[in-house]
Image 1 (cartoon, rainbow, N blue to C red):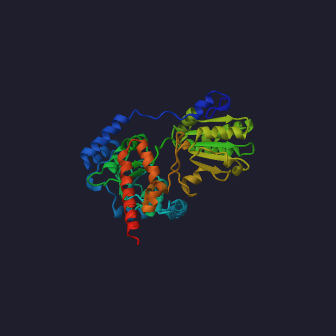
Image 2 (image 1 turned 45 degrees about the horizontal axis):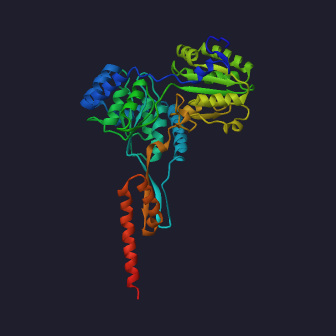
Image 3 (image 1 turned 30 degrees about the horizontal axis):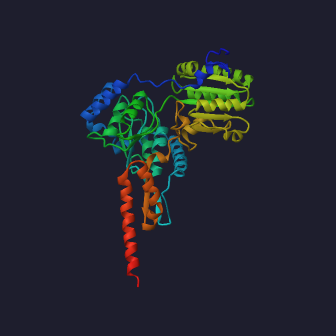
Length: 443
């Protein structure tokens, strides 16, 4: 291992690489507090929401002010710049168009007296959580609300923490209006998740909750699952870069730093067969980080969870990236499409040097709500399929049932479910009686 103050360089055979690939264990230290919050919201409704908002956000609210008004939303348009609104609308159109292509469709088929199909219906009411308080994330509004809108969800409810003056940032309100959000509540944390899951006097319960948040939000979503549906747990941000010797070290360093500035738990790793590139990127990280305002977060993230791994070849670099199963994967190679077929595990893949992760975060079109912590091995990006339900359809006439009856009876009796078998036999007995009557009535 070669020591660099911000980023370490490892050989692929170094045992420390295994630690680099492994996601840190989930934080469960706040479970008791989250359960206390959920119980209070269930018992006390709006009063608990106001009490927790005062306790955690230092904002005094009464129940009448929980919901953002139409007047506040209209006023927000006067606070944003024309450039912001144009950028937001460009992102909105691209994100909506991408997700409109994903919408699952109903289908039906009929053959041999058997009718089968699947009916696709949007969820009636969904809740989206948007982080806030000291920051504003209009991109999170678009990425969570637009797939629901494309899926045909009629009611989209947003919860976001208020600022110290009790307001919601104008860019967030404008993004919500542009994305088709139908209700907005100035409440955050586990208490917002509980309100969406169970309902209060002001907040009607929803069918599903999506959106990233802090550890309290994540734990609350895990605990209300079953009462409502939830999306994947949101962990710290991740990026893996697979790069060949021709890659631009300054650009790679910038991309690693873009993720490291999210928070001190961000995981940022470069896999490359080029020792020269590894050293150049480490130096660039040092140089560029020196002038970034969030250097404190960057130092902790890269020091604890970052690294550069020098591999035998690109094939080994891709193999290690697949084991990492990152939220974001950049293929910083001469022919990224040639390697795309080798990618098994990633939330999103960015192809080539001109497709950095921030483009996907804001305006490319694909969703930026992605699996983290290795969950890309089995989970996918947030999409329209998360906002629909599929209802299976089966219909048969007598001939169709006759074609399957013997197999159904045999399987049911094998499992000891004789009433299941009897339900089929009763219909077949009637069909046989009617067939005998028909034969007797013939001259």
